[in-house]
Amino acid sequence: MMRPHYRRGNKILLGILAWNFVFIILIKFYYMWKNARREKTWNAMTSEEKNNYLATTKDKGTRGWTSDLLIRGQCCERHNSLFERMD
Image (cartoon, helix red, strand yellow):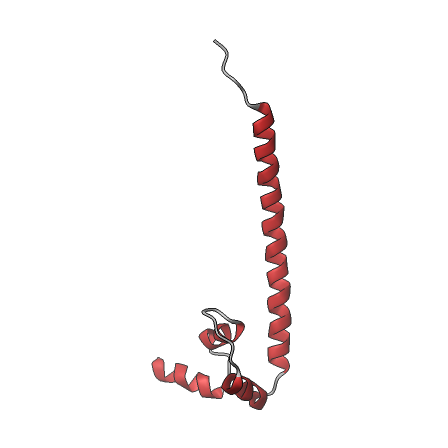
């Protein structure tokens, strides 16, 4: 008794798999580029500009680029002192 091989369906599934692999790599490079651009902008700011931005921004989010800097302790003196007290 012969079983079906589903050649057409398997080819379609392999195509979808290949597209997802390419798409994931493209997204990874996009976010690496975007984060590098944001980091460059942030590092170009003076400490006064950083403090002013943090005091006046209305940005909300669980993992914004400013919260990443806060987590790493690279934000500004005001936040760095908070991290020193936590240690």
